Length: 262
Picture 1 (cartoon, rainbow, N blue to C red):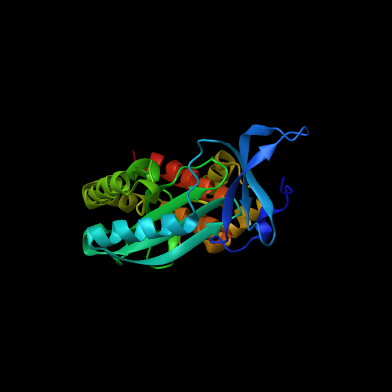
Picture 2 (cartoon, rainbow, N blue to C red; picture 1 turned 120 degrees about the horizontal axis):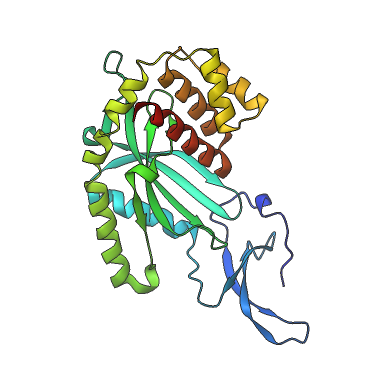
């Protein structure tokens, strides 16, 4: 059995990965399998899964994302990647006028849709894509996939016919994203009209349960006194952190501010 080492030491998200059977102390094969990361190098256990667990390599999910974008006819650039040894996310910010909204028409604060492809090697996140946003002025990510949706894949290249059907379904979701995206523009624009003072920030910090250090970072990253400016202070800090917990904190911050304009 491979050691339960520090998977974060494997910095290459495309390192070799294997699903290997586990054995009892009596050398009988167990019902569970180990996901082993970089078996020829670090050789660390990334997770314990069932026999039927569908292991999908990160290299494959990247190719799937490219296939969806190509089929939809969209150009995109990589603006974020997170890898912690078990979980993988890569953000493709889409360059197409139909998937760009303006949060402040007065100055042209443009927000583009992004396709985030995700995967995990321990079964805690399914292989799929999430629709989120990127603020083009600073490339801050905005986690709104709970509002815009996404697509979860059930098959991989071992079942090419079924996988092709799923790719087409994901493309259809992406092609139908624009109307949902446009519903967010007026809400962001209304945030620009709300002035936020120190007391408002402290209430937000308390509601979101952020540490004093994060609060100071948010204040330093905030340019202006509107709710939109403060929200961008939060998303700037969380994007810079570049971790899966910070991505979840990003989502909670956006929910908090959007509730102000519901």
